[in-house]
Structures are given as structure tokens and as C-alpha cells.
Image 1 (cartoon, helix red, strand yellow):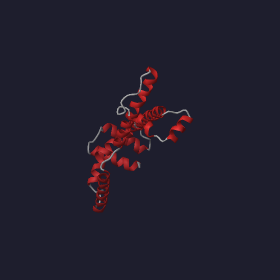
Image 2: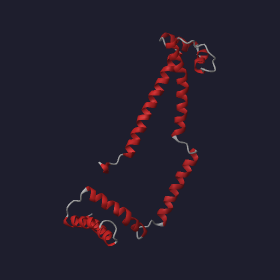
Image 3: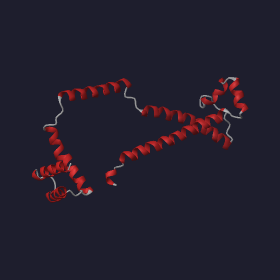
Image 4: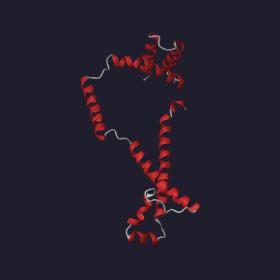
Length: 188
């Protein structure tokens, strides 16, 4: 590994790429077998990736025609998969979930306000359609709910609360993903 790094440093010095004094210091450290400081290693890696690796790709390490064909077929398969799915993303599912949360929230907030402000909930059934489920529930379901002292309004508020909790959890998950994507261990 050190021999390869020495060759890279000599090439960079001949090509006058980078600070010659620093490269000379790095060369002496490598020739003496001493470890490089982290900043010197990062500096050398950035110079190598910028000036040496592109030239290596251009010279002897070009991909063969077969490798390019397989890579092209893999990209084509991915594109076909995306086209079959119709470019669906999780955003569409989140939008539907947001609408359903809002819909349940509309009913739950009215229920909570009705309890605290003593508002009469006998309003137009088109404004609060979930409450019209009472009319189509079978008598057995109504009897079971009465047995456990549960009302349809309580169920709606509970479901809405679960949805809000789900949004909070999703928010934390995406926040952690975002923070992980920005974390660079080389800086610490």
C-alpha cells in the first residue's frame, strides 16, 4: 500500500498537482514508514481521486464492451421496472394517509369541541359522513359497543389519535434518515 502511495505522490509532484512542500513531507513520511496524519491522508486521497484515478480510467482500466453491455441491460431493467410501477413513490401513499388523517381529524375535532363547548352535533350528514355509520352498523355491533361502553365518536377520536401518533413516528424516522445522510465521520 505504501509503495502505491509513494508512486502516486511522485506522480503528483512530477505533474505539479498540489502543494509541492506538503507532498514532499508526505513522501518522506511514507518512505520512513511513519503513519500519515489524518489531514495529510485526506489531502492525498483528494488529490489522488482528482488527478490520478480519472487518468487511470482513461488508460488501461477502461471497461470492456461486455461489462458495458451488462451495465446497460441492468439500467434498462431498472427503467422498465420504474415504468411498470408508473413512477409511484411513497409520496402518493403519504398524501392518501394525510387526507384520511385530515378526514378523521375533522370528525374528531368536532367531537372534542362538542364535548367541551356543548355544541349540538345534529348537523348536516354530508359535513360529517363518518357519524352516519351509526345508521348502517348492524345491531350486533351496536350492542357490543354498548356492552363495553364505547361509542362511534370515541372510536373515531381514537383512530385519529393513532394516525397523529403515526405521523409523529414517521417524522422522527425521516429526521433520523436525514441526519444520517448528512453525517460525515471523516469530519469527526
